[in-house]
Image (cartoon, rainbow, N blue to C red; front, side, top):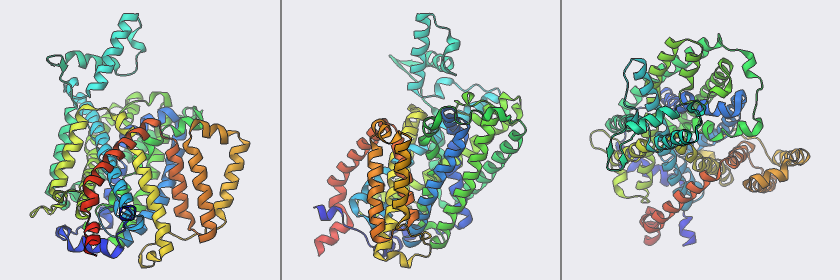
Length: 560
């Protein structure tokens, strides 16, 4: 059995399954401009319109450097993705790459993690869209029922906080932001017995509408995405140019008010903003020239988005003190703060439209991963079904819609942000490690795009020694491991990679991708890990009860 769970799919087999199966009915319409647009649509979504505020609140202006650091980690990973996309132009993204490199059990784990990543990312985007939508309506004088624009948990918690304040005589003005408003929404909600009828209706409805668009076809989705991205970039350009006139340099001091710990506390929010480049690879089978265009699009969208994120962060933290940015609509908030209500209104209206593009791309990506897993026999055949008219993975798209829409009605944004990163980091690490495997086996010789080779024979080991000496002299080596035990695994991994690099002349950039992603993983909280482990356990039950037996590679083993 141990050999069977590590059975690998050859590159030839992966490509053949994609070109001769049901997916040959997919429409090949995407070029490099479309792919870059999809990447920008996914990366510049709820991150820049919403979670960037919370990250800045915790880390101060120095969060701009965190965006740069995270982008560098993503560039290492994106280069690895690009080589895989050039070698295996199949829709499964990191799932397929792991299948080729490390075997079926790792492919399943990554595929299962990506299901969580895409679903959770879309829930965050849908909730953010809802917040901007209700704010936009309020700007036009339309009061959307508050109990139909929030989640039950947030409203109930706020109600309890207000009640506790009333009992103890504490002034309600000392409570956080919109706590009183949420408590009022809880009180105003109609009741069914003892249950309050509270749900984030706009989040659920927009998910259903986007799912319908994705179901109808890739051409329609592409056209909508391109239009929305142009609008989104125009709004961001307006924010940067208009906001620059209101920047006060004193707001950038202190630059890192809560130190490195405060900056890194925003890792989950910041990294969440960048994972969108992964979604480009899920459309490989709908690209006109995937081996040429996918690598280019990944690099283009990362460079564009990193520059925009850094500029936006500096403008936001320069316009107001970082302590005021713990809001869900920071771009609109800062312009209201400086009295430019017109631009704040334009941002709110545009955000409603622009965030939709991120929702569209994630909703586009997840069904195609399920389709690929089903085609390999690891999921039920219905997930690989292609609609005869629209030429999209129809059943998988519908299931994705339900999986995103229902939780987004009832759960809050921060819960989902905490969920999204562990599986993503794990996927990224395996993709970077997979490049080392491709190089070692000579498979990468057929790749039209390759990660630039820099011999890491000595550099990786020297880097380890320098980092250890610095950590020891600063007194953070042992204290860091005590506070975050996963750091011990990070140092161990770096040591092992140093030895292997010396023996096998490992390429430096994929190793840097492994190490940076692994270090960022150490910054995630215990709740991230616990939920991921539970999700992984559920996935392994499904794999061993169904996928292990039904795998197409298992059928091949039986025949041989």
